Amino acid sequence: MTETPSARPYRGVKAAERLAGRRGRLLAAGLDLLGAEQQDISALTVRGVCRRAGLAARYFYESFTDKDEFVGRVFDWVVADLAATTQAAVAAVPVHEQTRAGMANIVRTIAGDARVGRLLFSTQLADAVIVRKRAESSALFAMLFGQYAGDALRMPANDRIKAGAHFAVGGVGQTVSAWLAGDVQLEPDQLVDQLATLLDQLADPNLYGLMGTAAAATAASPDQGARSASS
Image (cartoon, rainbow, N blue to C red; front, side, top):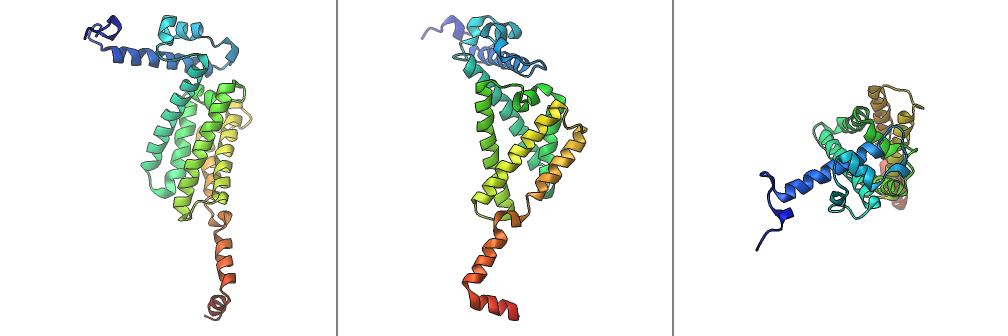
């Protein structure tokens, strides 16, 4: 079978590698534009993205259908990278240090690259695709946090744990947003300490109905309760 020109190696670089390289340049350009300090989503155009990436417009469409798909892919790319580094940071420390390690990775990543923080958390960026992707990622992180909390507490999943997980994810997001906007004026390490301390309070089993379950079991077995009281 004869290879098409676009599928042939060029200067020793295979076609798939060239495609991946162009896609990476476009995603990086998208982060530059979406995470800019002065955000104007209406100014984000295919032509503008390609100009930023230094590529012809035809290369945009070999990876993305339209601008909305592109915006979603930029968001997914950034979230996936942050999630991977956070999971690695958490896995590298003992259980009692994991909350702080996770928060430290998130805060320090944002402090080191404000574009990431603006894309994921800034309330000024009100694009419909970004709003939807933030809701999806929040639901995902709440599910993961709920699973982690359930495992740590050795409790089956329940709606109290789910509520706590959504509270944690939403609270962290809102606090980071306020920090980026300057409403919360803490140094990065101070913000890490504050968030980690607050999240550690959510590890109290009393918040998730554990004590209530034990009390209900005792009430259902009066003889057991009497024996416990007399022992």
